[in-house]
Length: 417
Ligand SMILES: [Zn+2]
Ligand SMILES: [Zn+2]
Image (tube, rainbow, N blue to C red; front, side):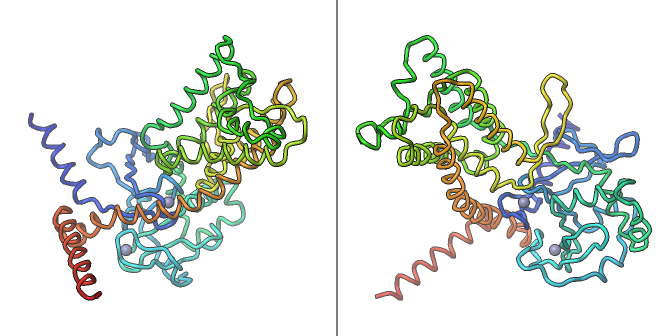
């Protein structure tokens, strides 16, 4: 008892006062707190454990999906030990089309940072907070390195924007992108693929019996059940491991944003539409197809749509160096692996149509899920952010809103005959 519980109480009270806000850029997630602290050498470091915060830790708000970050007024000053240059205010471009201040002050204004980044940054005219997109943070950080500043450094310094660049190199620019929560569907699906592969190796089940017969199923619709069964079997361990790896790399983030049921729908739908395309277009006498590649092609399409600029932090096997790889490189590697698999495995034909069909399904479903999720996040933050501004407990606001709704419904019922 005593000190620890007192700290805990204060923190909980602080959380109740925390503004909950939707990401103004991608709208796909609430902003989440990022805690920064100066280490002994004076560099800002991201703290991983929010339960062990030092008193002077700084809290910023970042989006875990698009990597954008929000600075309340003064936060950049604190980070950079400098005042924001008023020259920034003279570079007003106009009102940003759709981005709202996360603090609820309506539309933000766009400001140019000439010489540093091409895209304008967003600033709220009322609370003077700043929003930086994920790639803007990257650009600012690069421009503050010696190479990035060559022959532009004077110009930049004159304009007084160097503070932003300096600060951002000290910041952990990469707020990592760990999926939140356990990706149960990824684990279960991957586990099932492993078990069924083992069963087929030991001869309990014969993968051949369940393989997708393209042209044959076109001739005999009774064979269409193989569109569902071929997913679960793999011809060899290399093919299985490639699929499991890419399911794991992309699947957890996609499952997090989709939600479990929609993610299951994505896997099944991608596998089925890949199979159907294979049935429609496969050559007569083509080899039977097995494997979860069609389903995983759907996951990859969803990932590319959701995280087009994601850089994946990847530990290189065997040498254990962490490097950052853009998502499109991964996709290239996936296609390469599939091609190699087609050449080295004698049984499986390279099922281009199954992959394309799965990819198309993912590309079609994702925009729908994105719109659903944006609406849901907006709904989620509405009550707590109203409570924040009205300075009332969230429960009171929720009850008042529910009462309003009932009132409206009653009125619309009594007005209609
Ligand atoms: Zn975002
Ligand atoms: Zn504002």
